Image (cartoon, rainbow, N blue to C red; front, side):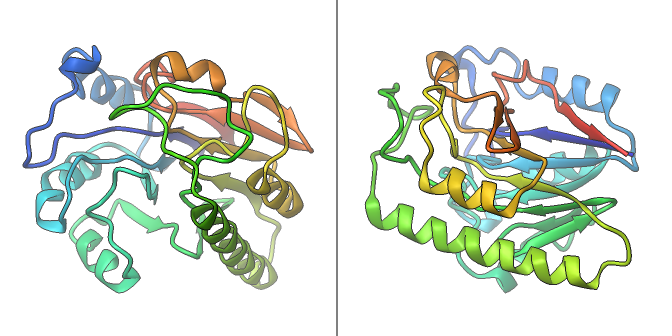
Length: 245
């Protein structure tokens, strides 16, 4: 069984918002071809946010159908553009019910899929972030209250992960899945990286960064955790193989 990760699918929704103006020619065609070629039906795929341009649940159905049609068991993380997601876990579960290959989502919670235990949250731009591009595919302004809220959400997710760990008969492979970078290329620790490294997963995958912003992401080991940027264009429009059991 293989574990893949990909972020920032930016699927068009019923709003028909394509990615041509960002240079993503034919999107999501190349991603579909690469996904279908690499991922098997029993593999798992972490989809780390900015899944769709939809703003309401009724606008996202076709995009969730597209995702469901791809091979593998999917675990979803919310991105800053996923306005369709909402704040109610019960309503989100109902939205996802017609798409059984989506086996879980991270919302103050953790998900076990195969040998992996996945926890995380959306996060936000931290004070340690270097200057980066703005705009639709750029960075968000720093908001201290958002950072405090996301640290709390990480804590809730890791607490749920510890609950699942306590119930397990064999150890899980722990993976943190988030949307915003928890660590940047300057390697300055953030409130997010500190929380993640305290939970001590082997791996943390994240997205959010695009184009010239890709260079701002940290890829490598820090505090015992291997960080990997998997936003769609950073990943070459293909799910990234991040672990194998």
